Image (cartoon, rainbow over all chains, first blue to last red; front, top):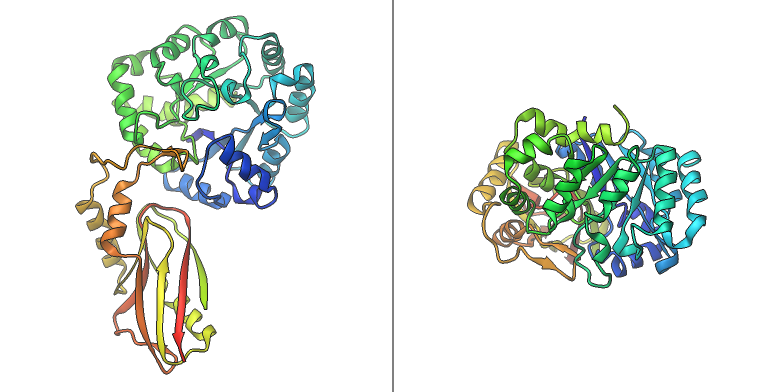
Amino acid sequence: MRIDVHVHPLLVKELTDNRPELLRDARELFDLQTSPQPLSTLFGEMDLCGIDQAVLLPVNCEKSHNSRMPSNDEVAGLLKQNSRRLIGFASVDPNVGQKAIPELCRAHDQLGLKGLKLNPALQEFDPTGPEALAIYSEAERLDMPLLIHTGLTFSNQFSIKYNQPLLLDDIARKHPKLRICLAHMGWPWLWDAAAVAIRNPNVYMDMAGTFAGTPLENIRQITSQIPPRVIENMLGDKLMFGSDYPRIEENKMFSAVSTLPVRQETLDAILGENAMTYLGES
Amino acid sequence: MVEKIFIKTQQPTELVPITSKVHEAVEKSGVRNGIVNIFTQHVTTAITINEDDPKLEEDIARFMEKIVPEDESYGHHHFFRKDGRMAVNAYSHIRASLLGANVTIPLQDGGMVLGARQNIYLVELDGPQLRGLAVQVMGE
């Protein structure tokens, strides 16, 4: 089983045709300017590289920016016809305080969304603050893994001070049953993210991102900073394949990740088995 | 009149035969004698004419990959504010430039004046994607 754990359901033509403000928000808030594509384009990409499933990651900025990109209901709608290929995560806005908790429960219990996506920069919240801590407790109770943006955002609309991977260390320690993925390996704070992942059994990292250049250049930059031996022996069961689609084409990221200088069984784990564990499927 | 044709490509690089779709557009126009122009609106695709042979289609795709390699140092590969993403496909753009964005074919008595072995192709160079082509038929 091969899984892409990092797909943004933005610029999905089926959604933007229905709700033009989603396209506006994708451009103005998420800073994505390329054209909407039908879901079949994503599936075509997945088929090209043998990806069985993709995890859809919405971002809820209802308080901070009056925006849901997209809503949990819209994510659930995409799953209805495509449950074999897509896994849906939910998002809630920590800035709404206690109201986030029932929405998280609804997303899990009624919409069948399996995990939680948060983005401290875009959602403008402190991941160590009380509102966020309450959400983590609920996610832990519901057995919903958390995928949280760490590292750079290209857009300077938002501060990146809350994107530091080390901020998640205490969260991981205090919520040992909450499986946490540090998105983008916390680039450029790769070693900080690696440290948090190495010392916490419940922490993973996804490799989505092209902050250092093309996907291949990105992988080369990662392995120039973190020795292949460390990737193999200490992070081999922590890393997960993610594309960051539509910021980058899935097959390009897949081709690049496939060049990692690790054993085949480690690569297989990165491409799917680790995600299965993170998602609670194995 | 400009007719739009939409093609869903399947591969990063592939030649998609579109002769029949262009023929449909010509028929629909009612023009009997003139020209038809097929133009791609995408900077990482091309329009070309060549022999209708699947192996040759593979050869062309493979040769483009050989002469404009993917793993090179390209100035185009930087963050594009206007796209909100890193540009990573300079090789696709260059290949598209080498092949060209349109072809024009004469029309006579309602048909395209194509040689027996000539087939019109959309060349996908950064797929898979949904692509739009503009077909314009002019004449009488």
